[in-house]
Image (cartoon, rainbow, N blue to C red; front, side, top):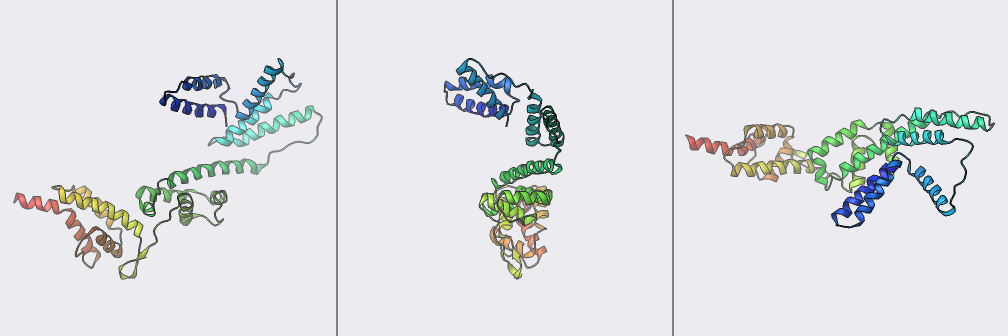
Length: 299
């Protein structure tokens, strides 16, 4: 974490204080401006600087600098910190630079031996960075999963599919360990398990539909919500655009007969028929009822 990140927190605080008409807002803004020369410093390095300032304030002097210039080594470790926190950071180069500085200092002190980079370290750090990003994506998605039915929302389904296919085996293993989930967590089930862990909700369990086939209640509830809205419009509007009707029917084509029958029950469609084609024709008829009324009026 750098001083620039600390400045962001202070600016947020200043904004809140301004909104509350607090005179302290100007003091916080002044502190942000005072930190500007140190924005690139790591917070721990800045804390060391403040310690020196306190030493000078109390004693009127600071300890003399070391005979060895450590600024290059500090800069090398700052680069490691930046590469660790930033996506695409070159950890290998930063690690090699720190190693070269440490070996140079050892040679000046008459120490034998040479430090060599651990080839797995950079890979482990990069993996940890990717897992933090994946965890953040899961948390953002979990915030939208406010009920079991939410799992069936189109945007949630799309993001779940993306996470299912984009997370690697190594990332799943590290994520599961970080969240204290079973090591076998992965794939489509793993996505659901992580979201359930973070949101406290699981998809509604499929119930037995007609003809003994399973019906995904959460999925049908989402379809029913959308179709009921179209039925309401069909009753109050002269026409529904053919493009909307065709778009909805294209989505309904993907449902099985048991799912369509369950959908008609939930949306109040009477006499839906016994075949998939009959049910779809019945739904289309209700959606285009306004069109038919208009056509009859014009005849």
